[in-house]
Every structure is written in structure tokens, then in C-alpha cells.
Image (spheres, one colour):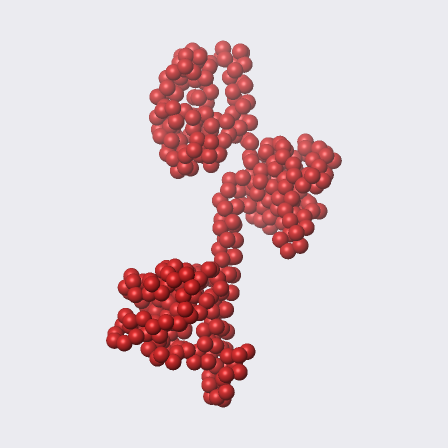
Length: 380
């Protein structure tokens, strides 16, 4: 209130009220903008209101996020500006005001910094030719817009983190879901909906967790597993899920775990990250079938030898990738296990299929299984 008390001139007080009202509308205009765009908009606004030569935003050190001059954007002048302002910006406890050589002409610029309160040493830096700057009115505007900017940047940071988490969940190939403690489903990601044969989130909302469980596991989950997860706060194991399209049930490796309400700290939700085991189960059944002595005799030695010869054409890394895919491992898990990137796994997968002369992973897996019947191929 000290700044307002000093605004004894009625005209200046009226001007301050008008400018503050204009600044109050800025956060609505900043909705959906990036942090850089927020800072650019704020710099342009201050430049006009303060009749300044220079307005820039720094997030600490010598970094400049936004910069505007009386002649327009100073994007092309960032390096010269950094050079001029570097000694002042890099001081651990810079004065709130200082004089520097005017980078736009003769004389000096009065440089005033107003902390934003978003990050350590983040500030709005204003350069004006008048050494009497800032007046009470100008200081009031600087303090007000600094608070507005800090609030907007904090909201942007929260929304940015939420978008990253949402993107992570939506890009996952696992079934990711959330239910309240009564078992009512609150969320299922896109991959999870596809696994159980639902087309949109609305088809899942309001259903009970048990509606997602296949008939053969209903009693076990209702009487044993769900109460156990509720009591312990976590449970991991295999459960057959329902196929809402009427197909066979889907085996999933399920992990249930409690989540706390971030406001109260109390347990409020049961979440799950569950992996589809269908491909792994098919591979296991195929391997068991081929390892059966009767079925082995139904595969000719010529076919076994031919499959083994094809598999030996693969590089050791390509064989590792094929073996992991045959075991039902996802590309992300394979990348983690082998210490390589997902993109590298994709390259090995593509080259492996090309060497085997097929475009279908199922055919490559069968070749691998058949080749495993040839003991000599295992030692190659």
C-alpha cells in the first residue's frame, strides 16, 4: 500500500487505476500460450505503458527469454544485449537499478529489475533514458505485472506437466486405468480401451472394475483379489479381462496400487498399469506345441533345417530382439533390457524381418520356434 499512498496526484491515481485494469485483463489473453509467448506479451505491454527503451525478461543468469525495444522485437539483438547486460545480470545480488551504456544510442539507460518470483533470480528488466525512473505509478505497474506474470507462469508450468503426463499415459501400449474406492471406473487410456474392445472413454466410465474381469476370474477377483488390493494398497498378478466385442478373454499382468488425493493426502483411488500377455501366451503355446514329440515329428527335418539356416543369417542383436519379441516383450521393455533406444529396437526389428524375407512378425516368431528344434542352430 506504500506505493499507492504516494500517488497523491488525482490524475496520476486515475491513470494508475486505468493501467492496472488493463493489466488485469492480460492473464485471460495468456491462456494457452507458452511461457515464452507470455513473456513476449508482457514485454510488449510494458514497453508501451512505461514509454521504455527496452523491456526484457530473464530467468536467471545471462539468459534472456523475451526482449523488446522501442523499435520492436529485439530477437536479432539478443547477443549484443547479453554482452552489454552480462556483468549486471550475472551478479549474484544485482542492484534493483543501475546505469549502463545505451545500446541504442548515446548516453545511459536507467536499468531497473523487478523480481518475478517464478524462478530464482527471474526478473523483468526495464531500461529507460530518464534517470528519475521509476515513478510511484511506474513502480506500481512493475510490481503488479510481475505478480501477474509469476501467477501465469506457475499455471503454465502446472499445465505443461499435466500435458506431459497425459501424453505419456496416452502413448503407452499398456492398459492404464483409474477407479474410485467403490470400484467405479474414472479413466482408461486409449490403449486400454482397445485391449478390451471399447471404442471410447464414455463406454468405460461408470462401469465397475469387476465388469472388466472375464467370467472365469470373476469370483476370484470379487472374493479375494480386490479385497486384498484394498487392504494392502497394492496387488500384482495375472487376471483374465473381458473382451467387450465378444471374443476370447484377454490375459493381463495386472498391477493395482492406491493413489492419494493430493489435497487431503488420503487414499482416494485405485490405479492400474496392466500389460497384455496375449502374444506371450500364444508364443508359449506354440513353443509347447512344437516341443511336443508328436508335433515335432509332424515338422519335417527339411523345414527345421531351413528355418535354422534363416535364423543364423541374423546378427546376434537381431536374434536377441526376435527372442524377446517371441516372449511377448514390448519394444520399450526390450530397449530397457538391452540398454538401447526404442528407435534402435525398431531398426533391428525391421532388418530382422527383411533378412527373414517376411513382413509379418508372427511368421518370424514361428521361424524362430521351429529353428529352436534344431540343436545345431542353438550353437551357431
